[in-house]
Image (cartoon, rainbow, N blue to C red; front, side):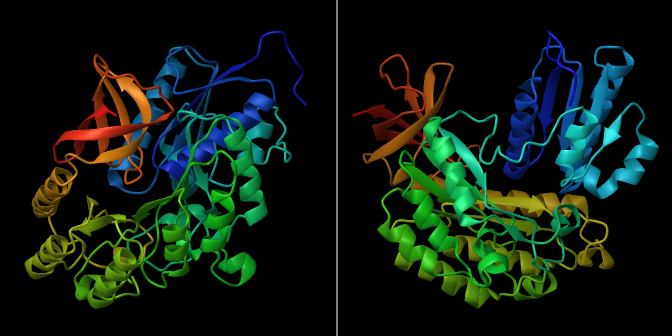
Length: 435
């Protein structure tokens, strides 16, 4: 045990990357706080120790992580901080190279090294803190990581290299975590995993996401439950019945499809065809009327031709997804796709991305125009300038539409729900008034 001193050591935790990293940082911060550290998240105040939780997913994310590490290494050199620690996906994947190339970092840790990281700081890993986190999001919503790692063989993805194989958390542990969060004011739970639809296969020898959803939705205080990152191949249709029949489960599904050309899907090792993808999306919409489907695509994958790109464009126009994001392909070492030639130049990748997003913008605008005059239940996240900013059940934080309400003429409480009549709409925002 660290000898207690009158003034707690200040720690600043900096988080980069996805919502799964956010959860990791919150757990780390909860452990530090339980060990009597004065811990803050992405604070501008001086701290004795800075911990950078890195992302190593694609080139842009890796560069952002490296730039952040170098920034704090310079701060340490100037004497503004005493210790710099790096953890997370980039550190897991490239630790030897980082140790060699970047000076000024005291310790590098991987994605599974939390107890060791704490020990280095003279802290104990407290097993009894299941569900206890120091929240970085507004307290009314929280991400819940239901599993770690991934068993899928996708050719382009380095996540298994950084996060390992799929490991589900037991249902009872997740329910306990949900109760702890609800008791602290969490109203919306956002379920995340690398592949949420794989949940339960390792623990229970069958997919049990639908059972988990039922039990989490029954936790008192949870008014919205949202599912992210459903894999299309082997999709468990049972979750659709639960989604349709359970009022507080959002009619929303994030299902990354990555492409629609059979050539690309086969090379990406996605285990599904264009025809089967269309059938699945149609089934989702039939079983859950009014569901909002969010997806993501990769453009510029090795061997992608103009014909493949046109197929994806036509698919996007035909399926009319409520939400869609597009990433340019990143050539990642030690993945199967790395053995292929990265033969689509950056200019072409960007052009294809722009064309896809232009189509999606037109679809999003049309979808939003149809909402004018309707009344929606909105959860308000923050006040920004002259507006209260919130979301409908069809929108997840940071990635989807927002509802803006003029603060001068309307009053709502941050973290509360309100009924909002939509008065106007743009491609990615809705405007409204309280009812």
